[in-house]
Amino acid sequence: MLTCRIAQNLLEAGPAHVVENLLPDYVNGDLSALCVWPDQIRHWYKYRWTSPLHFIDTPDQACSYEFSRDCHDQHGLKDMCVDGAIQNFTSQLQHYGEGTSDRRYNMTEALLFLSHFMGDIHQPMHVGFTTDEGGNSIDLRWYRHKSNLHHVWDREIILTALKEYYDKDLDLLQKDLEKNITNGLWDDDLASWTECNDLISCPHKYASESIKLACKYGYEGVKSGETLSEEYFNTRMPIVMKRIVQGGVRLAMILNLVFSDTHADVAAT
Image (cartoon, rainbow, N blue to C red):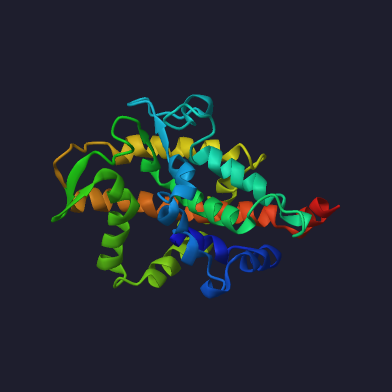
């Protein structure tokens, strides 16, 4: 949700209008309201094929990602991983300017899948080791309750930060993160984050960043059955927040490019 909120606030006028048009009326133009949709439908029969698209399993302890080696589902079907999914839905959205009468793709679904998967690929444990399923099978305690390592990075760290520092107010956390994009911690990094010569191959880089972070910060020093608390939270929270922001900045970059007026004009001719 945070990744999508940050991205939507960084959209140029034209692309922002396109995104609003693609969203159903009941969300009142709020992309983040539907950014969790791909998680909600992944076990429905119609969408079961999307389940492997949320992550990448890399070889245990390799701490590296290679598209040709790692981007496949459990049956070896190529491109069936979060990197392949981002490529697929980006290229679908590039057809947006072709008009409504001859649409091969569901543009609303493509937008929601792309937005969600840009969050997933920046969550380090979504590009984790194969045997432990990105930390899902590493059961542990987060402070006083049961959790697992994957869940710690998906939710626990963010929820603890919200409780400790933001009075459980997501808007306050969002404002804090956005302030650091434009005028603070990350303003010098923006150019390098959005460097992308080829929209289709750039997700390789995002996945490689994630597995390196998973090795250095996610798995490091963690054993099944132990309790993680203050020390882990304080040292990992900045990584989680940075990845949320990077995902948002890069999602905005993609949407601004694929929905730019010039692109729509070219696609329409």
